[in-house]
Length: 329
Ligand SMILES: [Zn+2]
Image (cartoon, rainbow, N blue to C red; front, top):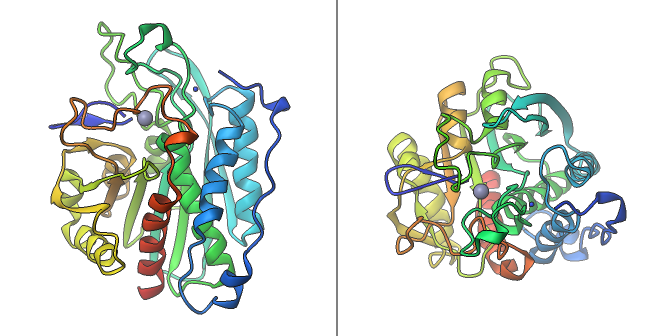
């Protein structure tokens, strides 16, 4: 993505995926199985899912790391009992590059008409264009927070949904090619809608004809230590009751320090295209820093967006809030 205040767009080298060795997928812990009648979001499991993504290397479209990580998501979602749709698309980037992209959808309770959409982007930015060292600008970022954190939370939620089926239909969509927008150093280039390419495609070509959800929740940059989630302006403008419900749930669970009771900037992120294309409300939970020039944390689109800045406690706050909401629906 890029810019804020009025409008922000939030929005990887390739670790040559064949050399990457992954830690094993965490097994369901005894506590989460035993307590499957209550909401349990495993703090360590979510963190491992983030680490596993980062271990592939930057997930930049058209790279081996990106392809391998896409397979990983499909495998994990299937293992967690989801009905999986893989939507392949060749998407044109701002510079004409043809991106081989995949939106990956995990469906729970396809039999139910009432549905909630949970989404995040899984690709990572090909440029560290906001690093103070210009020598890094052409290097891709790890995207531990910007990309992997949201997907890590959603994978743990999928594991829980596999253990205890929800009473509402849940669709988890991992959008591709969110973060391939015009780099900040290319000031001459102006291309509209260069971000969120995967969600733009899905919004026009949903995995189910005429797809609708009651509402959607987008997670983006939800893993940094001491993250602050202000109420994103467009979310409040288009879906205030959903925002209030989520922020109230978070506060009730003791996560008020993360879910700040104040309105933040308007951000152009996947939720904008979901709402425009599918015509149901979708809100964005995103780390916002009102004191920074960009509106984002200092690691945003820099090499510092790596595993070091991820705090399992933040992932837990977000994941437990969403899971509680789903089971209380
Ligand atoms: Zn980004």
